[in-house]
Length: 383
Image (cartoon, rainbow, N blue to C red; front, side, top):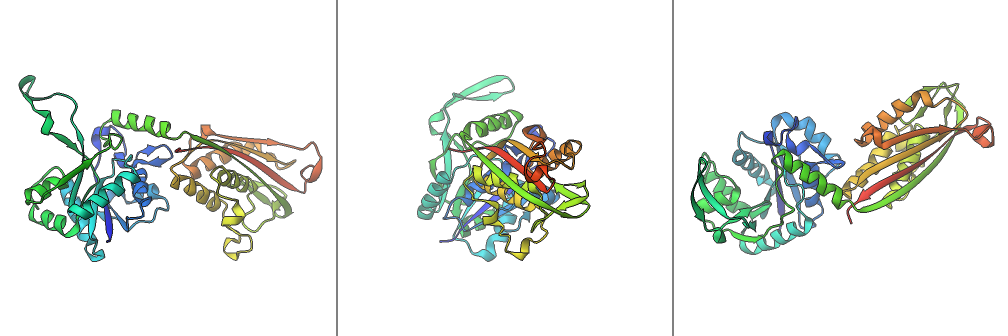
């Protein structure tokens, strides 16, 4: 059985009161969209994921997904229903058996819930997660209550909603031009029996500014596994006219010798980040024996380690980086290094400390033979 996922991310999200469409707003170290996508990538039953995005959002989308393995996105339409239809059409050549349709603004869907929905949909053909309504429901006109509605037969629908692909595709075709609020409503209008499965109150849709604040608190509460990694690296000098430290070129009468650009600061930082997540060391991922990494910009290594953290749904709490040398003088360049590292890691500069020290003329650094760097990184991961 082939399972496809449509992530509907073509909306503009104006009610959240943000400058960006809400799906591209940061939530921890990732975007709301990234969190939603990553949940489906954790499920072995899922074979392919197709995002449907707004035509104007391709740059935002590419920045948001990092290195997640997805199908190329398709452009959505003027309404959610039109966007889903475009996505269903694009999935046709892949011939999926089941399709899950999920709102990008629901970042807290869990892999366990996704698996349960797939299993139920495989058996019954059309499944929607729902939540009971616990408040008393009133029918209101203006500010006047007309009547109280019996809530016992009412429920709140969530996504992902799952259907046999051909079933929901034909239903969407039949209902083109008739705007309905979700995919289960389209199925119902075509006489398709839709069954329910228990929803998850954590899987709420971010719609308003208050929803976004709630989501930010939830992310902080989820990241309760606090880990620390330590990195240390050394590079000797050779003939040259500058050194690269923290991604910044600093004038000097020598350069650092190494297989890549020999950025001792980013190497130590990469090792610290890998250490915090149990990811080995930089040489494991980028062997110096591999000519592919000859003269490589060390930001490549740091971004890779950061992506591994993102895949674990973790976040960086702080970075403490110390550069050890007699020369060049580091303090005039510390601000630029800090800002560059913050940009690479999509991190607030206030979470990064860049320090420099000497060894009082002792040892290889004291003799001016090279530069050492030590980094300490603290990360937060879900339990």
